[in-house]
Image 1 (cartoon, rainbow, N blue to C red):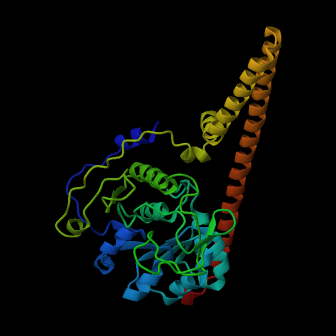
Image 2 (cartoon, helix red, strand yellow):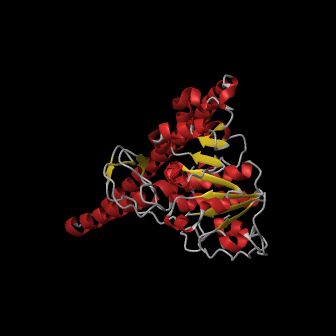
Length: 367
């Protein structure tokens, strides 16, 4: 089934709604959040994320919950996240296992939730790819909120901003303070901050929201986008001011793209899912290689005028070699995928054991 089919079968009734105790606001850090007075949301559940704490300190405000599921960003802001935990104004933190371990005694509190320890076992969080924004919405649903509104989720990133320098792999580091168009306040990023390229593959964040929204709909959770100009077009839109007051009727999403969700099937092990993943990963490269070989064969025939028998023999040999190479690459792909699943399962298991030990030994003063 395509993503569009899923969404068409799961649209909520677009009647007038308003915020209540079952509502959670997910606060993305895009430029549009500058138009939101965060203190006006204090009576509701809010989930803030990543480096927005710098702004919260400026206005003396805190969200109810904090999330950071980026392993690089979390470690880059370890000391500041530790301060947020110790000051005691935020009720709960969703953090990756590497950060939980690095925080040591500071994380020995049941207010810290280990993302890697809880995302399996059939939870809504078990969706790929994990992004802080999309999984904050899923976390809200796991905590029992039935209406989720995303704010400041613009999904219109400039991939490499001025003042950033490439590091290893997809990692970037801010080396000089410059204007940054990706965030809602000046100073969101500072020299020394490390983070990943926003979209290491095309539309990673937009696709993460698509997959998360499907899971939320299937779980009976309504999710809305509070920014009509957002790049996330798969959600109904809601106007924030009337939603907080007299109520507002959402407007339908306008995304009409149907596609096979290859990445979302990454944890599936059916032959059909594996073949779709394989084609998505290698199809373009294989097509280019086949075209190059075909061109070389045509050039050989044109310039050497071989016999028909020799042409048939060469074609058969190339065909057989192509099948063999494809089979070997596919076997390698399946083996690596299985190893990746096993590694993920072991990582989750280690995180669960570490989390049990952490919670068993947590200090009462950090509750």
